[in-house]
Image: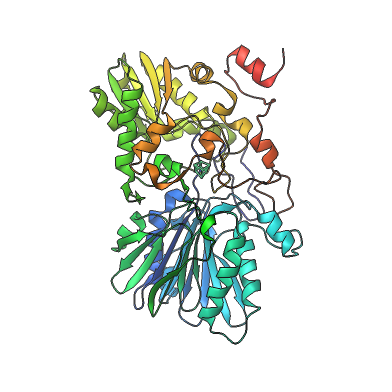
Length: 522
Ligand code: SF4
């Protein structure tokens, strides 16, 4: 049976079956008078496609008007040549979205727009606020008045802007940001555009990355440095946690509207492990090199006799190379990824969705038959993909399978811009490592120690969030936080997400005693 599209024509996306953490949005901004800023933004967003595939959009200013174009799906779906050619101007921002607060609809696609008297602005967001409900209540908003945390931020900014008179637009925007930003709790790397300037904001914890680049005659803001590379810009620096950068015809300046004691660098550790592109630079470190080091340290932490080291495409591959280098075991390819599918794709039928893993990965039998394999992956979230992948390798003739994971067990949900679902869906929140090994049907399983992971980044003392691994949340999480908190729709509240769930169904293949202990029954 064909899956039903919703009223906006959005088909369901294969996601809940996926085993990896889901990305956290990408943002981009460019100030480049005389240059084709819409095309530059398109290229920048293309380089950030891995951070969000549900929708894409951009806002372009020609100095007098702001035009927003957005659509569901990939960057290549959202814009065509005619659209880009029509978007003339000197400055622009763009966003690729993966939804956290607010459902995946065209209405919630970004950038979000507001017009206040003669001031127009648009805003793109990477991250997730944790005090949305309080902010909406404090502002006296009726249920449904705003439908995402980004929409809420834009509304608060617009309300603040409308209260100013007798000062320039630039002064008004600075003042409004200084009032609104400190009230936001959670993760927010923002790009904002109005008629004359682009603005970059990084929250005081710096959960999500944001960097500044220089382009011939212009400036660029981007979630990750490869978005600078693709348009020929060079990296100037990463924005500091708590920094606001304003770029206009007078140049680039910054200010810091947050209290000093609120500034506490906590870059998401999973940016290093999985989210960021390998060619990105975070905390001044090459992400690829960090992932190779993770593999090297994993080999020292958990050696094993084996014939071949292979990585799970694609983010497990650098760590596999590191493991092979440090262990002396040959590295080889064991799985081929269908490069035309990408990380998410539309599955037309339920039957195809259940075979999503086979649509993405296929074993390379010549390298597998009779071999003792070390299989390196970056993380296990729900375990469904890993289990199916292990079965594929067994069917292809693997003699032994030793899983090595380049991060510690993923036990706690993320509320800072990544959607993992409830705690009951996280395999390591419910099973011991030995029980996971049994569930996955592998010969051995080792997760990387947290201290080794931190050391692998090359930036140990720089400050990281590791809440999904330790349960130590840098910012308190309200008990009723859910993805649908602003939409008046029942969602999984934080109480469920933060407490082990004792009942769950359809977990085929769990060892009987484990299933019984976890899920009850006889
Ligand atoms: S909870 Fe995990 S995924 Fe979320 S920001 Fe912290 S380290 Fe990253």
